[in-house]
Amino acid sequence: MGKKRVSSTFVAIIFMVNYLVGCTNNSEAYNNVEEIKIGVTVYKEDDKFISTITNNILELAKKKEKEENIKITIDILDAKENLANQCNQVDKFILNDYDVICVNIVDRTSAATIIDKAKSSNTPIIFFNREPVEEDMRRWKDVYYVGAEAEKSGELQGSLIIDKYTSEKSDIDKNGDGKIQYVMLEGEHGHQDTAIRTEYSIKTIVQNGIEVEKLADDTANWEFAQAKSKMTGWIKEFGSEIEVVFSNNDDMALGAIDALKEAKINDVIIVGVDGVTEALEAVKNDEMLGTVISNSIAQAEGIFDIAYSKATNGDLSNVEGLEGKYIKTKHIKIDKNNVDVYLK
Image (cartoon, rainbow, N blue to C red; front, side, top):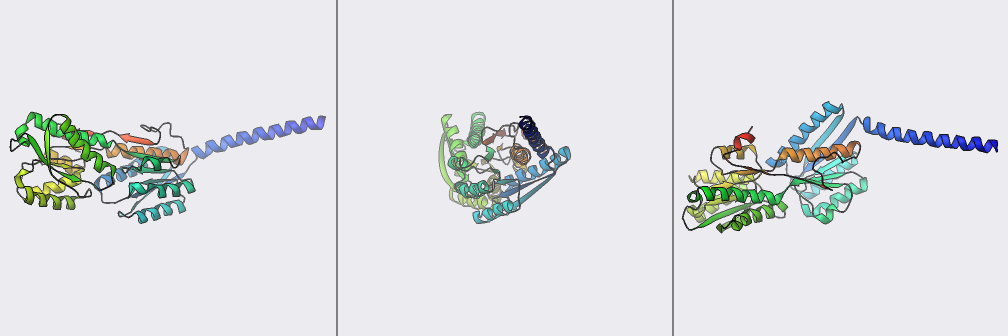
C-alpha cells in the first residue's frame, strides 16, 4: 500500500510539473518571439493606391520592431496581374515558412485555390482591397479580409455631385436641360468596387431627385493611360455634351483630366475615389470637384494588426475594427473645403 501511495503521489507531481512547463513554454513562445515573416503579394505593384497600403505596412512594421524589439521581415511581390504568378508567390512564402500571407488577389473569384494552399500549410491568410466571395471566405477559419465599404464610396461620390448641383446648378447642368449628362470610367471587370461604386454613385443622385443621362461608360482598368485614351475618344464623340466624369478611382480621373487639358476643356466636373496625393492636389487646384478617401493608412493598420497578432500569439481580441473575419474601413468625402486637412 505504501509503495502504491508513493507511486501515485510521484505521478501526480510529474503531471503537475508537465502542466506547468507546458503553460510556461506557451507563454515564452509568445513573449520570446524573435522574428516574424510576413509575405505580401499584390495584383500590380504600380497601382498607386495599393502601393500606399504596402508602404504604410512597411512603416508600421518598422515602428513595431522598435517598440517590441522584434525582427519583422516583410517581403512584397508583384504578381503582374497574373494569377499563376500569384499562386507561385504564395507557394514560395509557404515553402519558406512565412508566418502570415497577405494577398491583394489578381482574380477575386479564384481565391479558393490560394485559401486551400494556406489551409494545407496552416498559414493564416489576409486578403485586402479585393474581396473574395463569401463562400470562399468560409473555406477555412484563418482567412481574413481588410478593405473599405464600397457602397459608401459610391454614395459619397454622388453626394459631391448633389452638393454642387444644389449650390451651383448651372456649373453642372451647362445646357440647362435639367439633366446631368455624364460618362463613367470603370475599374477592372469583376472587381467588387467597380460594380458597386458605379451603381451607388448614380443611384444616390437619382434618389435625390436629380435626373441623369449616361453618354458612355467603359472600363479603364484603374489605369491613367487607359482612362486618358477613353476620355480622348469621348471628347471627340460628345464634345461639350459631357458635363460630369465619374471615375471609379483617382488614377483614371487624373487620366481624364489630362485628356481634357489637351483638348483645352476646363469646365467638366470630375470626381474620383482613393484620395491619392495627385488627386488631392487636383482638387485644391480646381481640376477635380472632389474625391473620396479610402484611407490606406487604416487598411494598412488592419492588415498589419491581424498579421502581427496571428504571427505572435494568435489572439485577435485587440485588433480594432475586426468583426468576425472582416475589417471594413470608413471613407471620407473630400472637396475644396477640407482638402488642405488631408493634403500633406
